[in-house]
Picture: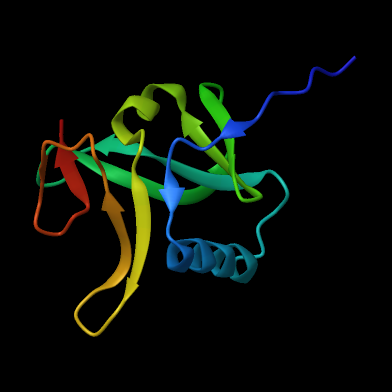
Length: 117
């Protein structure tokens, strides 16, 4: 008998533009069924930790989340760093890419891609 995993609401939110861009990327990349949006952090960057946003397979220490039908995987240890974070997508003349608004970040670098707690 297979045990079904309980999927919770994601600990992060997305602006409409970020969500639309992620769905566009997901479709353009023609992902296989077992690839999900990965959100997390990794060591490095100007301020000590940098954000991770990619499509990836679920790993042993991951937990599944969902945001408006989008399946998300996140290492359980990363939740405390991104809880309450909002991901935005900017597509302007001076800046194009995902922007992370993180209430847990004590300091962020000028590029907005790394932070410290």
